[in-house]
Every structure is written in structure tokens, then in C-alpha cells.
Image (cartoon, rainbow, N blue to C red; front, side, top):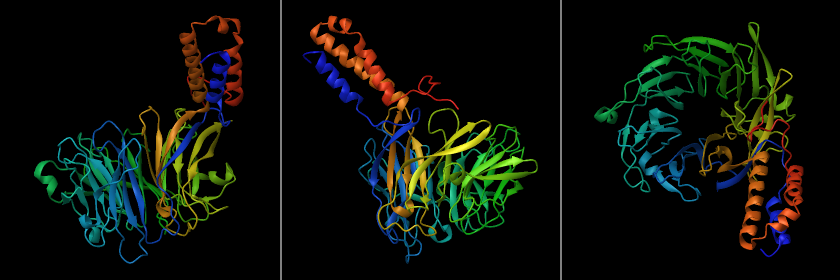
Length: 478
């Protein structure tokens, strides 16, 4: 750099950016599998998980793939992993040949079953009586198919949710499995040694009373033990219920508490308004009303608020699954979910920012990205989306993965930080450029003579990326 004008020109290039809303994280999309028109009959991603499969220090992505049920049989179901940091290569883990005819892994968890230091895959068949439930041992060469597997027991007619949880507080994780047809929930303690190669014993905690879809866990009654929360299935069901964790951890049926007939397929229990009682929030698939809503406890009942419409004037359908996670780093939980906008029929992965203004709860919508392409048909069963999050690029923030399911999309959204943090980072870049120029020229005088340089560029940055009034260490507070 020969003179101060070169420095300023370089800083101008550093600054160039589109103005964004202050304080909120910005996300850059990275497509692994693009959306495809007419997903029917195609193999589409079903569930995603983040784990360093090959132990190289980079986070990897694991995804199960299934084919639509209204096609005869299941077309080429498989599970694959995509090595970070670019996630563009596909390594087959479990092929159709490993499954057998008409079989697939719909959902799964990763856990070191055999204690060899590598995480194995515990799969859940969508209809285990014909699909089986297998766990697949991680091989020495993780790029090769995972061909060594064991049947850990079918035991449910229509498995739809599988979770890892130390449910009995014995220091070892169990798997908790849910049947979406009956609502039955069973627990399988994960055996050790040779016992893991035989069907795993189980006990029932929820007998079930009809259609349901997903589970979540939360201490509803304040006794220090996490309870199980369930909701509807898109074809029907009783609404939100919670099942009370017994105090003695005995393998008995848990007491059922019916909450409200809400049109949700996934529900969470939280004291959202911090008034000392438990509210519920979630999303649903296939319902015309109330499928993106939170339910505030009012006396002995619950008052609904459909936040997609009430807070955002945008009617969204198809919230098959959702999760609560702190997206913007402000210390409270936001909601992430897929879904289809009624106004244009496109599937989007989005997050709803939790805010509290004048003692009123709001959920402000922000879109990660559009995850459907031309020809996407948002009919019943085609809305689905599954998600995961973690630090995918090693920069110590939270990135998000989305499997569009009905759209065929698989990709991740890189957290580029908030505009406030971008402002701080760009100022550091500017200072580094100036320091480099001074080091090369030895000319500190020009900077001293024109001390307004940094001040002026700082003003420009603040104009383009205004800091929130309560800016503090890169976070905004509600």
C-alpha cells in the first residue's frame, strides 16, 4: 500500500455490505442437496444429526433418507454422512441392501453402544414390525458401509420418535421410543457387552391412547424430575398431554395429565411469561387453525395465541417438527421450524425470535432460507422438516441444518454473527489494515495528522450497521 488513499480504498471494500437489522444473527445458506420438483417417489432426507464421525476435528453431518410411502415399496432408503467442513461428499453408511426389502431407518440417534470409543447408529424403523429396529456398528474405516448390525427389538408398530435420556438416573443413557399410532412409549436401557447384540429388554411408561407424533421433556410440576410431553399426530389425536415422572424411578406407567386439545404435532412445556406456571408452545402439520401457537395458562385453562398470524401476519402450515434453541444468543429460547407459507406455497426454514414487550410475549419470524423448488407440492405429508444445530465450521457459534423432507432439500445455514458483531469484526479488520500500512511505510504521521480517518470510518460503519442502544458484548437483551 503506497499511500493513505490505498488504505481508505481497501477499508471501503471491507465495509461494503447490505444493511441488516441490528443485533440479529445473519445466516448464509450452504446447499448439500438442492430441492427437487415432484419429490414423490424420490429419496429425500428424513432426519439429521451432527457428530465428528471420522474424528478429524471437524463436525460432520449424518442424514437418513427415505422415499414416500404412497409409492409402492420404499425407493432406495439409505443413511449417509457428509464430512465437514464443506459437507459436499457423501459416504454411504447404511444402504438399501443393508436394510432388506421394504425397510428404512426413519429416525436415529448416535451412541457408543459397544464401548469402543466410536459412536454407533441406533436406528428406528418407521414400521418396525416389517422394517426392524437395528443398531449399526461404526467400522474402523468410516468411509466404508456400516455392514455390521444387530436387531435390538421391534416392540412397537409404528415408531416415530427416538430419544437418548437417562430416564432412571442410573448414570447410563436409555433409548426412549414412541409409537405414533398408539401413543405408546417404551424405554430400553442400553445393554453392555454381548447383551447389546441381542434384542434389548424394555418396559412401558406410557400405554398410549391414540395418535401422537413427538416427545419433549421438561419438569412440568417442579419436583426436579423431567416429565414427558406429547401432542397430536397430523391425522388426529387428543392434543397436548404430559406424563408425570414417578419419584422412585420404578419401571411403572406414568400418570397422565391432559392439557388442551391443541393442533400441535410437537409441543414444549415452558413458563414463557415467567408468571410461575407452565405454558405450552409448538407447531403442527396439516391443520388449518392453531398449528403455530403458544398456550398461556389462565386460571384453570389455557388461552391460545397463533403467533404466525397474530405476530407476523403470515399464515404458515406444515410445522411437522420444531425445536426450542437460543438462535440469537440473548439467553432465551427461540423456536426453529420448517413450514409452508400459504401465500406462495413455498417451504421455508425459519426461526421465531422470542421477545417480551410490555409484559406481552411475541414470536417474531425470521427466515433462514427457502428450501423448496419449482414443482413443490405442499399436500398432506409433504411439509415435513427436521433440523439440528451445532458449530459446523469451528468458529464457536451455532449453525443450523435443515432436511426439507417433502422438498428434498438438505443444507446448512452458517451463522455469520449479528450485525453488531460484524461491525466489531470489520473495525478490527480496518485497524489491521492501518497497522499493516504503518508497518510497511513507517509513516505514523499521516494517521496522526488525519486522526479523523478511523473516526469517520467508524461513523460509516455505525450508519450501515447501527448498534442497538443496549449493546453489550455483542448481545442484545430483551
